[in-house]
Image (cartoon, rainbow, N blue to C red; front, side, top):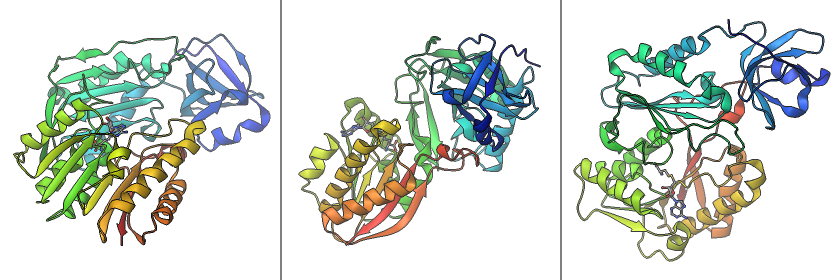
Length: 398
Ligand code: SAH
């Protein structure tokens, strides 16, 4: 058993969400603390009468004061994370992702969805990249790395901690990026549905690749033959590679970042598709969409999260509406728009409404053909619906 030294007593009327297994305790729900917990400490949560409600990781000063890892009487054991990591790995095996020859990148741990609040682990052909978002998980980093080595055995080639910039700015604990095991500093070439991608977790955005679009990229591929495609916010060129593999006649990858476009070019070349059919465009997406000259059959809008928190939601919605209205105005009649939002603060309903109001503004007839979401290796804990973050629509614009 872990040695638990602090108890947070919950106000009488605030315990119901914990009893429904919601893993967040807001600071306002705590009546008082018995003990003096340090940042990230594992503490006990109890009703004022004394009954244990669960255990979780404490973040002093934060609005989400505790993230529960254990509910009810179950107390954290010495290596509580090990069994959960094994369980998450078993789920990826069940999903035919672990041990798959044509897709060797997948998410192993998706925060609350896998019972690890504040932890992300992505897998690229044996390389594991860890991102810690809360102080609590930082305490377990070395233990988690040891468990990963045990679970993957010889199939684990390296483990990289990329949490320097993902801990909250107010955090009193710090960490530096670096290898916890191995040293694959040049990254890896990983496979997704048989297509090759150069993954550079050391220098790249996030853990190096946006694994969450795997199924949506495959759908795009299935609709791309003979089409002219504009991939805005292209980053590694994931969507572009799928369109080229499916015999699109022209693919433009657009990003404001030069290094991102270099990556896109590399990935296109890696798959043998370099040539006239693909070009990169360094531009601001809004500016380019305003002045489009090409008649694209398919436009992809996959911007970064416009709303990182609730306060930014209104502005984010305006941003989504703007780019969607522009793309709808410009797309060829009968064309397909693949539009996404990865902002957690903008839920599915709000996103759909925003796209519909963009259609009204554009004055085009729009039909929703597909409603898209994050794939199964980004599971949503049924008691924590906030874990659903990626939303997308494929709409036909007449
Ligand atoms: N679609 C990508 C992920 C997009 S990440 C994939 O499938 O992997 C978001 C990208 O948007 C980043 O590469 C960033 O450089 C780019 N970006 C951010 N603001 C932009 C803007 N105003 N115009 C064009 N690109 C932008």
